[in-house]
Image (cartoon, helix red, strand yellow):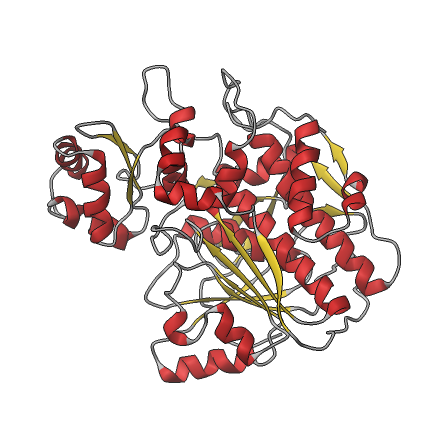
Length: 464
């Protein structure tokens, strides 16, 4: 264990309202240099996983009325899990989720980062830049279009078209930006008692293996990586997680395979009154709602935190966003790589020739996902003792700010996540899937998910 890992765990645990002395009980194993970077990626990864494991252990203690099981963080499992996209195989084949148009581009005055892994984002990017969708060489055409404009001009134009692009900034430049300043004023995360409601008692948790979240009903309204990592962790620990997607907005296959284990998946079109009625029926007996869409996008359906808790005062609502709910960019879309570029991480990880770089893994997504799971578990435990409804708020930008407050090395170590083989393989309806095992471990707890990943939308919209 590194001193910094323990320090970061202490900070995260304080935000979650945990007893300070509990963090000393975490068992750390394995080498701490498996995610080399100029930034403290390994410490960030270990601390976020430790927070989730410790929250799971404390929830087990609340349910059973006895001592908490030990929480363990194995560095090799953490490194493998944070690089889970590289470990993923379907019938022995690597799964590609990155578009050729998701990359860094030279502009007239610097660099731009774009993200177009989803087809609708790629279409908006091309439209914003005046590039025909059937262009013979779209990469060359985009390169030419961006080279003639400033970074901010490209970013604003693409954003106005609903696409994803940001100017690459240094950390000091981000600190001076209005959005960077807004995020800097925020804590890592918030977890608060939102309204009055009676104590929600919990029955003892199953012990073969120990699954502290067993019996919890979780509505999963998240996409991409961070939110699905959180709900995948809740499923590992026994929760009945139902992921709800729009039939008109398919998930990338690789991301579904990577983060869908343990959950059930259904399609509901909330634009249809009949499907919205189905969701409302599910909500009447849900314990937790996790949202990860762009802020305000679910408000028109009455699915913002305030409205949800008004209807269900004992609910736990956890909200994830890219830029936080504060500042001029609070309603903008973004992904891990986009946030890295805007806040100075890509600049710090730049190659010797000045080309912007990236962390060895999508650490903002994964770390925020485990912190989100920890917040839900802590909220459920506190609700059983203190009563009330609970609201957790996290963002990729807040996690990035947390990381950027840590020391920066002069030179990164060699790339690669290292570690042992912390993967498993299972037959599924989609084929044989090889995947990373969860790094969230408690004594007597599960080693794997009870159900493999299934086909998107294959399950009925109901509880088990």
